[in-house]
Image (cartoon, rainbow, N blue to C red):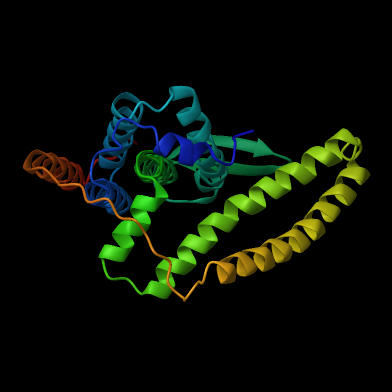
Length: 262
């Protein structure tokens, strides 16, 4: 199980911590947009590989942890790919599968679409992990504040982010207590235990919200969180590198826009 504070701990200790958050956000978001709108799998796969190398090698994120995080979205997209492979028609047939009297046909169009979906997912998630694992949330909130986003939006984002991990910690504590009492020993007991966990988590969320409100009032909260912002200068080399990388990825997307594997 991945610890609820893992992302924050890695982001605060990575090798790219001193790089300006605006530059990292521009590279990550730009790479996501290029990968999502790329008509071929070439650019997203290049983005995925380059982002993974940058996160593991330059930021110093352990490869085992990175692979565990990436396995989560890959598992979900694999389920979608199976459906797309055999439920999307068009093109030449490649393979027939007979199940319970039904015939499912794998075609060239469905295979190309599945590869494109997988490549876009890998490119987008690797870019998102680049942002999450190299940029602390405090820096992201600081960038949001500098962009003159509404104060209510920034403050609400900070509260939501904090409470996500509060609820994760509470759910882990409740789940561990249930496991020690054999709450998941049978299927029926697992259903009952999960229902109790969901109900108790709702109560704990309400209690934690009340406690936070009291704490904020005790500290003279006036409707605006004060953030300590650390200004980092963006070097010309960094801007040139980021611009060159995004232009190269966009060029690959345009150059290989008609590329198909099948």
